[in-house]
Structure formats: C-alpha cells, structure tokens
Image 1 (cartoon, rainbow, N blue to C red):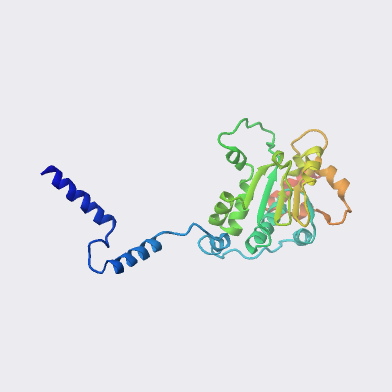
Image 2: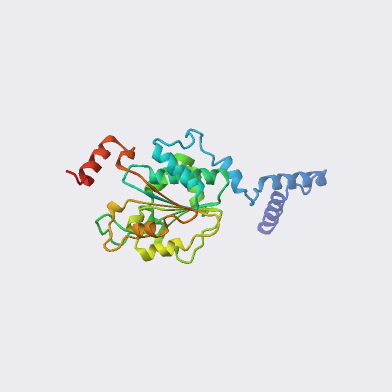
Length: 271
C-alpha cells in the first residue's frame, strides 16, 4: 500500500510541474503554458536612459539654474565656455552649488556620462581619525554638501542609482592618480585651498580632451601648512587658452546677510 501511494504522489507532482500533460488539447495547453512563462520572466537588459527618464525620473519641481548675482552669471558662463574654470572666493558665493547644478544638468541632458566629485580628505582643524566602513563610507562625510545639491537638482532616486552604477563618483583626491578625464566627464575639485602644489599638478595632468573641470576654493580658509596648491595653480595657469579664473568678492555672498557681516569682521583688514 505504501509503494502504491508513493507512485501516485510522484505522478501527481509530475502533473503539477507540467499542467498541460494528460489533458485533451495538450498542444494548445502547452503553447499557452510557454507564453505564460515567457511573459513572467523579466528581461535582464535595461536601458539606463530609460530608467532615468521613467521610474527614476524625479518630479520636475526645480527650475533651471538661474544666477542670483551678476558674479554668479559670469561664473556660470565661464564654466560653460571653458575647459578649466577656477572659482575663487569666500564662503556662500555659490561656487560649489553652481558647479554641481551645471554638472547635474549636463548628466540629465545626456551631454556627459559621468560626474566625478573630488576633494582632499582634510578636516577643518580637527583630526577625526579612522572612520568606519568601506572607502565610500569613509569619504561620504566629505561629499554630503555636494550630494545635497544633486538631490535638489536630480532627485534622490536618480542620485542613488547613479552612485551605485558609477555615473556619479565621489573619491578622495589621492585616488585620482592614473585616471584620465575624457570628454564625457564633468569633474569638480572642491575645497581646493587644502591641496598642495604637488597634488594640484597631479590633478591637472589628468585632464583629457574636451572634458569639463571646475576647481573651487577659498585661499583664506586653508587648513594646511606650507605652499597652497590653489593659489600656485592660479598664478601659473592664468591666461592660458581654455582656462578661466573667476574671483568672487564678499559682496557676492548669497548664503545670508549674517555671513557677509561675519566675513567683514574676520577678513576686513581696515578694522
């Protein structure tokens, strides 16, 4: 009795695996079963642009980038029209925001394939020691401000997707050696006042044909000792074709009125 019931169980399971067997019109059922299986299996080939433009498309709530001051407009024009642009000036003038917003627009429109954001891993007067996690986790604290800009311009879904797939890259300046920035790349070096002349030379020699590079910094807020790579590069490269140096003033700060007063008190040598 036990053996007979076991055979029935095996035969029954076989019928469940192939539901079109043992019935009239098995050819028709077989074709229907194959169609159902083919429809249930998702395709493994995904077009990246379709993802960005459909399921990862953020709500179009942000307006196109508009300059808040004449100085910002000149800076935006310089980035658009030059291969290498230096943005020099005090805090709150929009150096990082304008560069990040232009990079986001270029990525969204398809003019570039990748954004690289880098900066020296230098703390502002503190030694944080070894941070936990992988390299991406350790460096993420240094690019939070830039990530906020991209979230505002592209949406968090797009930014997270592009970070996972290498369309947006954040890496310490020390890891730029050996790389080449090509025409499909928009590169931003932020907090460049903390770069040494040797590091700046290494970074500048990564620039390939027709790529877009923006270097931002405030030489008055350097956290390193010795020669400053940002000031040194500006002096050496000023006047070269394809290179523009834009200088912001304290009056160009748009962060808040209080920031302008703070800058006046800290940097005004007349009082």
